[in-house]
Structure formats: structure tokens, C-alpha cells
Length: 542
Image 1 (cartoon, rainbow, N blue to C red):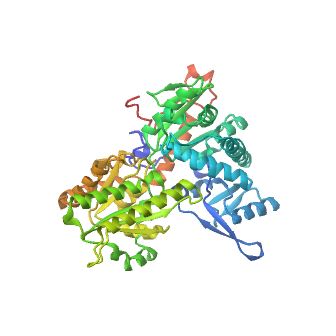
Image 2: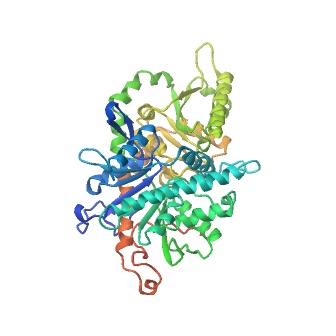
Image 3: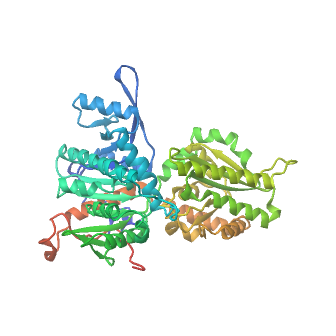
């Protein structure tokens, strides 16, 4: 059964929905995200090349694209994007089509470079992203200075307003009231702004990263954190990766939004005469596409040299080089493992595939320096000059096929993130590994709720416990390794990223179509109604 579906939901057993709308009658779909599904580059004589992205949302939307031809609103992030947006404006082209036949239709938000910098590089990253991953060193940072306030008001608020304008314009360009699906932390103010323009809008927002508890939100001034919560309450449905993150959102609304009434038993927030549903939708991967890429010619090309990094035992990690991934502590735990179990020295390699990320943010630069320093120190401590063995092999650079190729051969996959919305590396590795590899998984990763039964669970700051987990994994009997690996694989294969997206669309449809209860009809617009159906946020501990 899908983890999102109720027993009566046709998605629960993949049965066809005989009552579903025909493609012609389906509501138009508008998706808004900071990064779009397509990147443009300009060729000579005004022609443009378009390259489709490979992110989870793009993959999921592709599954429904043929029926709905969604309109995607995104920021123009490259010179090619900006030139394409300008060409569309000059030609009176309301929507830019991608694909033949069209797969997506696009509208670009084109903020000034300064406004985009303030919105993205000052507020979204690092301020909000660090806050939502509990990463601030609170005695020292953040400092909400005049520059931060300026970036909030003239960057984050302004770019969210531009997104709302483009969404409203796109909604005006289609027949019927569309479903509007907002993505992530860059657009926290957008739903409220859209609802001001279109009071009957059908809005849903999915937050891909964790949502911290109310006390941590006090790192932001009250004006900011209240605006974020009130903007989010402009949605009909707010979705999170885990029930725990959804519950934290409800706590935060109760703490900082005057007049918000939270019903933890039903996972709803009542505010300004409206009912907002809070739900969890754990994101997954496209298993067939991941497998295809892992065995593609491009991925197999790495088989020529990757075995040079393997040993009798191989520990693997695959991460962006960012502080939330806890890379340094993972290396310290491996150091402790080698120190405590000298019989493994020379027999085990730790292969770390890391992708430099957001290198224009100083905190990320500093963290990458810390990673490089600890690797050098541990290799110097244990390296054997006579045999040529060194314990840690650090492979830098973004190459997704290479990462997938490596996942087939590990004995241990270490995912020790401090906190993650989900962490798809854990799912990709579980799907692809051919050696009955053991997953060591942080309890801070969202994936633990789905994969924890078959993984070794660790605390993200527990260096000694992680060292013991590595030893446990490498000495585990083969039959137990096989049982765990098969359980992990079944869990990943039973879920699907297209189903993840379709569940959200289905919930919007149910929200729109279910009749309102009589006692609420006087205070709620006709399309703001209680929901039944897909999974509600758990109330355990509420």
C-alpha cells in the first residue's frame, strides 16, 4: 500500500480509477519553483537550446505532463533563461513551450540581479536553509542586521511578489481555476500573495526540507516568522516529508500566528475563516529511471577506474558538501573505527563522493575546507607507504552517473546527516546495491521512517556509536545482510516519485470537490473544506 493512501484510495492497490476525469476535463496545473524544469542557452541567429533538468519534481511532473501540459513558473537563473524570457516578451509569447508535442509550458520570473541575490543568497540560502536544518551557531550567528532586513524586504518579499504576479497571470491564461502547486522554502510568502489576488485559488505547497520547532524560529524576528507562517496559511494544503515536520509547522503557527486554531487530531489549522490541511508526502525516486542510468553506457564508463578505490571492504558515502550532511563526523567515526579495530587497517576503504555546493556562500566554503583537512589528517595517520594503502578516498565533483555506479559495490553506505527532509541517497543505494550492503542511517534523516526497520540507526552526533555501527555492519552475518538489503529494496520499489506527486494532485481534487459541512459553510469559501482520503499528519506526541 502506498504510504500516502487510505485503504479506500485506488492508489492503495494501484487499481484503475474508473471515476477519474478524462484528460480533457482535468484541471489546469501550475507549478512554481525557484529552479525551473528547463535551462536555456542561446545559439547563433537567435535560436535557443533547452536542456531538461533531472530533479525529483521534474521527474514526477513528467508522469502527468501528457495529460495536463503543466505551466511552470520559475526564476530566470542563467543568461540564456533571461534572453529566452525577453524573446518571449518581445514576441508576445504568453507561454514558452518545451517539447514536441509540448511537455511543459513556461513563464519566467525575471528579478533584477540584486533582488535575486538578496532573495536567494542572503535570505533563502543561508538564513532560512540554515535555520531549518538547525545549523546556526546561535551564540555567534545569525545577526539580523540592516543588510538582512533590506534583503528581506527588497529581495525575498519582492521576488515572492513577482512569483505571485506571474502565477496570477498564468492562471488568467487558462480555462477554469487551476491547481497551483508551490515548491519549497524560497516561496513561503507566495501563497498568501496569490490568495490576495485570487481568493478562490486552489493552492498547495510542499516543503522539501525539515521544519524546526517554534523555539528555533525565534532566531528570526517576529515580523519575518509571522509573515512566513501567514504566507503558508494561504494554501489549502501544506505538505511535508514527514509527520514530525508537519506537526512542528502546526506548533509554529499556534505560537506565532494570532487567531490560528490548530487541531492536531485532524492535522488542520483554522485561520481567517479558512481551513488548511497539513499532510505528509514522503518523496521517493523513479526506480526504473535510476536503474536505467546506473547501467547506462555513461555510468558503466566509470567501472574502468572505480574498482581502484575498492578494497576487501568498502564504506561509501555520497553527499553534497554542505554542513547538514555531517561529513566531518562521519570521517571522525571511521578514524575511531580504525583505531579500535586495527585488524581492518589495510582491508577497508572509505570512498566519499562529494559534490561542492553553493560555493558562493562562505559557510559552505569553510565546511569544504574542514572536510579536506580531516581527510588529510586521517590519511596521514594511517597510510601505509609500503602497500600504498590509504583509508579515505575523496572523489570531488558533480557526476550523477558516477555516483550511481559506485552505489552498486559498497559493503556499507553511511548516511549520517544531522537532519534531512528525506535523503534520497539512502533510497538510491538501497535500490542499486549488488553486495547486500548495509545501510547506516541517521535518525535525523526523513528516510528513517520508511527505511529504519532494515537499517542500522545512529545518532548524528554520536561518533563512538557510528564507529561501532561500522564495525557491526562489516562483521554482520551474510544472511542478516541479505535480509536487510532485500527489505530496503522492497521498501524503495513499493514507492514511486510519480505516485508522490499524484497523491498531492488527488488531495487537491478531493479538497475542491468534497462538499463543505453545513456548520462550516457560512465561514468557509465553497472550495475550502475538510478532507478525507490520503494520509494525515500523525498526532503521536501532539
